[in-house]
Image (cartoon, rainbow, N blue to C red; front, side, top):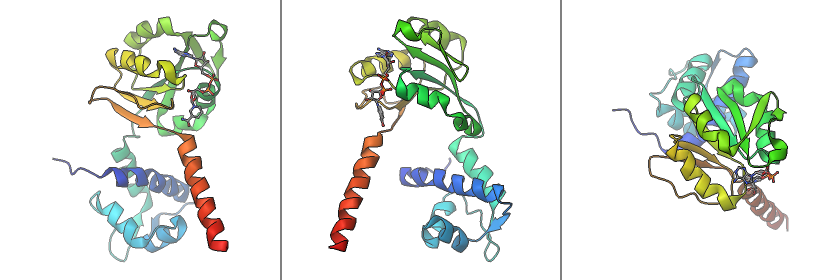
Length: 212
Ligand code: NAI
């Protein structure tokens, strides 16, 4: 059986992936944990510990093979395969997600936007058509949908998420400010930019106190 990797490590590895991608772009083939540590401002021992979870790709005194490590982490994160996404709520945030090209570089492809506002019916955001919610079921039956992003008001979010699950979608990228109540097998990733801002605010306060 594959070893279970802790969620704390899973939260950290996309950052490794990003840095390794930059190293590849810079033509770097090998890197030691000390060098990676200096770049990423993470202790070398943390890096070794994290990467050991994946069987330790490094060789003593030789460093990590950047491309190999990048590919392996990509495999672990499942980004060597395409994930099709639909976005529910084609307002400011939904359209901003659809406009962001680089998700596709990582295999996340937005294949449809859905809304209830007839004024948005048929408009296209970076070539992706906005459809009405009553077209959703037929769409999901025809297309493979791996992830639904919820960028709609929170009032209807739970009901909508459960409807998506009943259509066979088992992964929700939730931006609505609400804890969804879904069957256990469904994977949910909550994104709250305000949480991140509050963390920033806490750290600003801490920084001020240090200066006093
Ligand atoms: P918006 O008002 O521009 O867009 C919301 C869209 O959802 C509208 O086009 C509306 O017609 C549509 N909608 C309403 N009811 C719907 C339904 N039942 N099914 C499908 N679509 C429906 O709002 P914005 O700024 O794009 O925000 C969207 C949501 O995301 C809000 O709930 C907001 O609180 C949340 N949000 C979350 C952030 C986060 O970090 N998690 C950041 C910004 C917004």
